Length: 101
Image 1 (cartoon, helix red, strand yellow):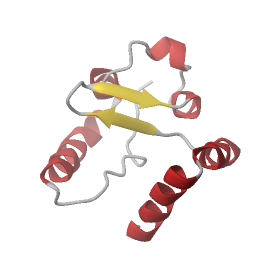
Image 2: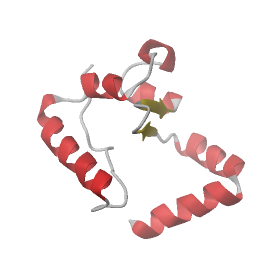
Image 3: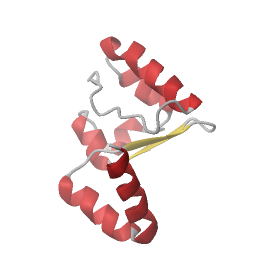
């Protein structure tokens, strides 16, 4: 996993346009959370995966994500986010979370 993360980070630094094309072609749904501002960003594919479009999810904040996460996943997600915040894990992989819709 760490190797994939490093590879993606290097690709983003060296050629962000190529990375964007790859993400679009692979139809990958991505979200990113800016902790201090509570701002959440995601691509259109992530919104589609959970049954919405980006416009329907605006304003997009971590509260939006919190309101959509399945009740069975809240405890695990909270634990992983806390571990990431402490530096215990390098990346939070939330793709397995169920979303309510």
